[in-house]
Image (cartoon, rainbow, N blue to C red):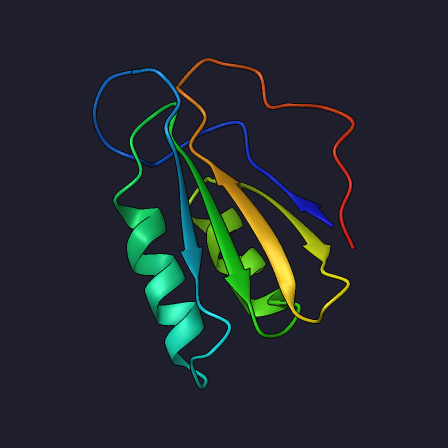
Length: 101
């Protein structure tokens, strides 16, 4: 599922993409969503955050879209999901052709 918005609400000016991995699969709800949103709220334009969650995080995807962040979720073969969150710089076109589970 690709939940995206062309307008990012993240702070700061554009900088090179930096990917961070956050493994939240061992946490109990609602901690995965809370920690993922806290990390997403710190993203700067151009940043990329990869989050591993214990389940397909539909509420997280909705919350990220509301924040103007682009998110792509895929199911992991070992269970859970990988969510790639991108803060698109203002004025940049969102990526096309992305699909998730």
